Amino acid sequence: MVGVIEIRNNNTVSLLFVDKEYQRQGIAKRLFNEALKDCVQRNPTLKKVFVHASPFSIPIYKKLGFQETAPIQIENGIKYLPMQKELG
Image (tube, rainbow, N blue to C red; front, side, top):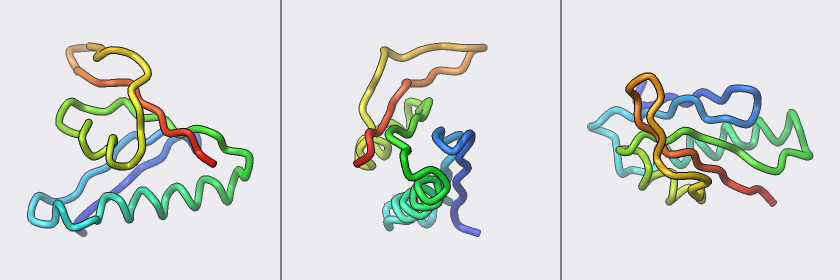
């Protein structure tokens, strides 16, 4: 396995990881696009997808079309940036 994605509630990316040896090969984008197709198939009226992006992952989520919705947050000692991607 070189990568994994998990979507919660059919609209929130809860994790997206690609093995370091396989990064920068479009795997995260392919995983996300396939997961997004499944989400839209389950709910054709889906308008937005959300993520709490770690500081390290912000660039990839921006490349995937996500935009910041609030400043960086810290919750239970974990930093994240709330982001969303509008669909359609």
